[in-house]
Length: 277
Image (cartoon, rainbow, N blue to C red; front, side, top):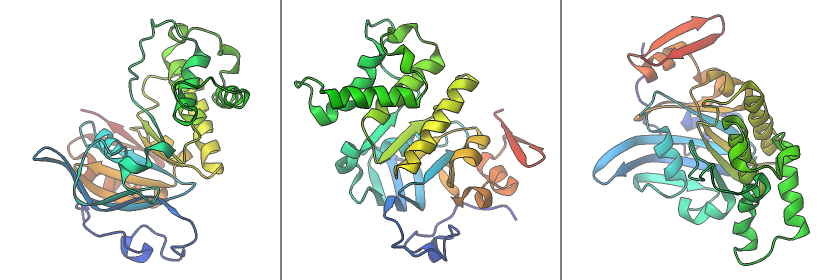
């Protein structure tokens, strides 16, 4: 039977169907709660009846075809798109109130690659929320920047001009900028698009490092391997929710076919290859 969009609320682990019925709700604080949430641009609903919970130290992959609403959900988590029904809670607060502890890496940054700014200066931008725009960075701030660049494998490029880096390296710099902010929740919108294998590995390592420190991660991706390698949960989206739960239990061919509709799915052993058509 083909799965249909789900409509249950994540009020308890047992009720949510997320596979955690044996885990006490109080074991870890929730970093993200979607409770029958619907978001809209004006009068037009974009996402409806989303539900699920992500706990501290966990990562969730948002998977679905282009135009499914993955970027819209990330914007809603930032408080930039209104919730018209239900509730979204981020780090125990409304999304807009939690921004200080949330870092965001967009698909395409607005920073002009021709602007004469160094890699180190770009990453230091992640510290400004904490130190203020008028104060000079301290030795501790510079240490945070150096550590963030080390984490993404670009410690030796700190003084290079940002625009001279490859696309994958620039994406890693933007991730380092987010890491330097010391977020409790990291939002990544298609971070693996167009990046080389070295950059992909560095991004995955950085995600796992943040999780080990107790931060939570939401990553939008078309790469199912990323979900298996770095994510505890998967949210399948295509305007509605077609699944939210542990990666292995949620990334099934049946649910993926329902999510992608007419898009082609190719099975290769234990992997599902999604082809945009």
